[in-house]
Image (cartoon, rainbow, N blue to C red; front, side):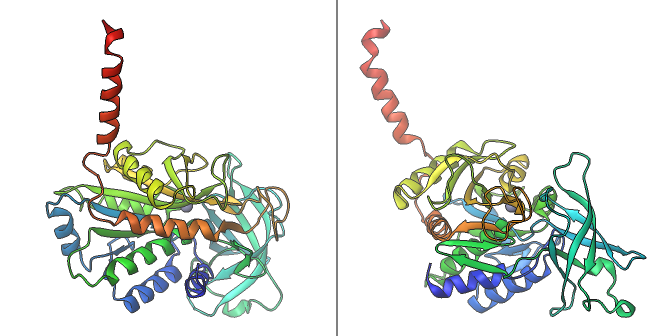
Length: 391
Ligand SMILES: [Zn+2]
């Protein structure tokens, strides 16, 4: 990844986010897209739609019959984190956690807390964490602010405050590993921005079969994606719409960091669409030979599941992710203990490979209609060869 791109990625990863509190990411995305002259608009649920500038254009694009399917790239702008609930008598802030989290070594972990004011970043520590009934994540906790952080008389209203774990630096690069709070899914957001910028840079003014959907609140059940699909804008599509979920997903045997992006066969909930998966898989063989991986990533679920539920063909590409949801499974710098709070990490080559794969998915003339043509021919030849034994 070149220096310029890396610094763009770092500036995105330095921004705070949490489910329903994606405003800083939205602001960044809007500024990048405006500068690059890529059309976009906000849907009624606050998701960012990229590639068209209005609902009318969106509908026009999907309702125009074409052999080329619309590629709808999806990534989410949130990451697990907490919201302020109320100030307690002991002057701590009671918070509610949204999404997955570490459950060990949480007490005493440092956090950053943000408000609506761009400059207000406050520091504190988590104390008295309470876990959800099934013990897989934090439910509520108290934040004790560091001395001098809060002027108690002018304290902000709790719902304005949100935050997540704090590490020494927002982003640390060691060799080709990048450590940060929220690889998941800000790297997906970055890859969609890059794909959009390249697609719309092309000199041709012809309509592009590209849509990007940057969603909100994925971590609590794909809320933004579901809200978008539930608008019904895709119901009257006159051409195929292929959903491509871009995620960072827990490293698993066969999905190793640095070995390339993963053609995701499915997630924890379901397998993905076989026909479109074949196109993606063949394309990966062609453009990233020996530099991609392929497997079911069942460490978590992703927005391809949400698309599948709404009857849309869906596929996915994953970045192998260390310390998924800030749980120090793989350890590394600043990990508070096995399974405890830690920065997530990812390999820069995997991101670069994912950008290349997404760009290639925009090529015209891919075999979306008959992805199995070659296999069918081979199977029929094989049948013919064995015909004599069938008698
Ligand atoms: Zn995610």
